[in-house]
Length: 166
Picture 1: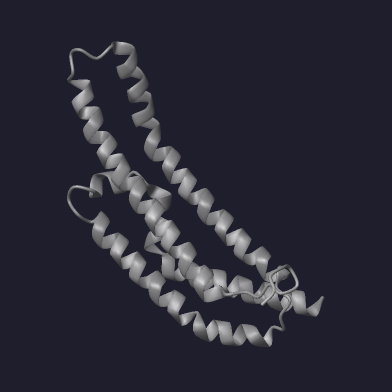
Picture 2: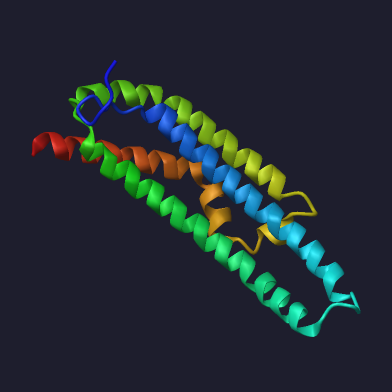
């Protein structure tokens, strides 16, 4: 088996599942981290021994955390999508093989649906729901993960056929 650009073959199923799991983990860790940061900040704000400047810095970090992480997840999602579409142009396969991949992508769609449901169940818990509501982009992406995955596969299919016609 040789490795290199010429022997590069796509593995859409494994790549798709990996991207979905990475997004799920990053989104869940971001929201749970915001919850933990909120608990720590609440304890710090009542500490009389804490210097006011340290409390002000912590307040600034706390205020920007949800917005920063939400935008990072959106950026990661957009970059993963662009990478997936652009990598379709780099594959040196005939589009007929993509039909087999589309059939195998049913596994990706199943995982996407399961991850979306698990994310919704976890974020619906009473302790995490107020924090999850502050992550607007993340909640939308994870809530519509199956539909977005189908749209991405459709765009990759178009990219494969455009490449074939060139």
